[in-house]
Image (cartoon, rainbow, N blue to C red; front, top):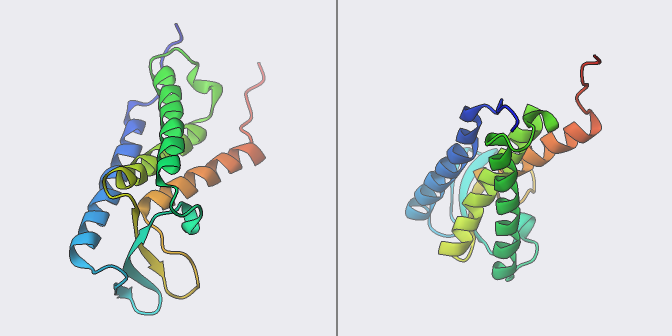
Length: 164
């Protein structure tokens, strides 16, 4: 058995993402009519209530069941990986802390968006960048995108191991 050096507090990352995103979605759904918006910073940032039945940028519209199945497989695989590291079955230094954080960001975002798909049959998107023509997104999307960027960073600039 491998000694567990996986920081326990990292599990708070996906939990925080799910809670923050779901609270924001609950607020938006309860206070802003569909396709209406509320300007936080006029002409820069607003909250807009949009139902997204596709994936990122509205791709693959109307394939909710397929999206849920693929997302659940991804979530299960990543959760199993993290669980095995946490239990000491896999060496925690196989991946850097940055890569593990990236996976946790992706897990949190995926769980929150899958919860929407299961209970609403669509994802509530609400962050609108008014100064550019960019798709509306949510906190879960930010987490998934940040996780992907961190993984790409790890691939391009891998950590160096100490030479012993």
